[in-house]
Image 1: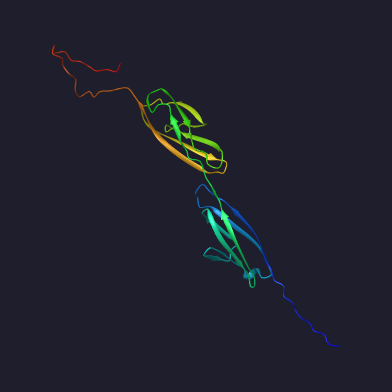
Image 2 (image 1 turned 90 degrees about the horizontal axis):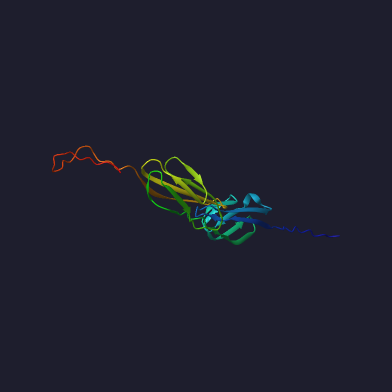
Length: 193
């Protein structure tokens, strides 16, 4: 009896594709691919025009990407979208930015919320003091110009900061170079009231 034996080669390729968003305009989107193939040593990955053997593409901007996965015999095409997650935009109001020494000033956070809730509000008051909260109060004990910085962080770990200057007035002083004489020949002095 005569028998004929044929060999049938079955090939396949499958992929599990995961993408993570681009957070806070940081060019940090990511595509990770897990491939099952009979020829894993021959697998190549192409994302738009970038060809590589590694199965991870990172540092991606938000947008659509054409992904091509290829082994010795098979090819998979897929369109992957990296979404954008907006972060907060820090902002605040000052109750008064022209102060005298010892005056209490209020700072109220008025930040624009992005795609996540703001969970931290850190204040640097410019005089070595730091506080947390959405509304804070502070008294400056020394005259001068202070840069007040607010840093906000949301639940996606997106961060933003802003700063404004305030001026704290001190005692008025006059130089001792000129002391006027009146018509009566007496010397007159200027002193703070």
